Length: 191
Image (tube, rainbow, N blue to C red):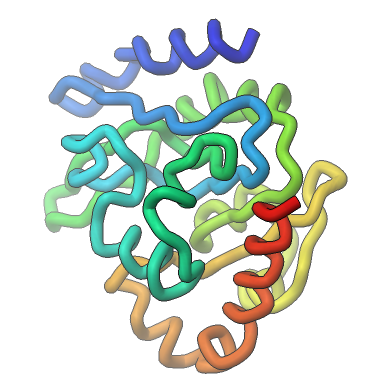
C-alpha cells in the first residue's frame, strides 16, 4: 500500500493547470522512518533538486538547529520528510511563495499519515502547526512537548531567513528549547 501511494504521489500532476508549470512532487522517506517531519511546501530549490531542505532553511534546520549531518538527515530510515503539499507552488505577484494548495493535503498527505509507522512527529512552521493543532497557541506549541495521533509531536518555528524576527523575539527558543529538541531527536535516532 505504501509503495503504491508513493508512486501515485510522484506521478501526480493535479495542480499543473493551477501552477502554470510542471509540478515535481517531492517524496522522501519510508513507511517506518523514525521521525515524520512536516513543513509547509517545497521551495524552488527543492523543486529543482527533488531533495527536501536543499536550501537556506535546510542549512539552518540540519546544521544549526538539529546539529546533524546530511547522511543522518537524508537517511530515510531516520526521517520521513513531508509537507502540507508535495510540490513547490510557485510565486505570487509580489514574489512570495504561494500558499500550498489544500487539495494536496486532502488528497495525499492525510493518506500518508495514516499508514506511516513512526516514533515522533516534527511540525515545522505556523501553517503546519495550525493544521495539526488548530485550537492551540502557536508559541505555546513550540515551547512544549505535544501529542498528536498518540505520539510525541514537536512544533518548530520555520527556519527560513524570513522568520528571523520571530526567532529574535523568542530568544528562549535558541537558548533553551532547541537543546531539548536535539536531545529528543538524538534519543529517537539511537534507539
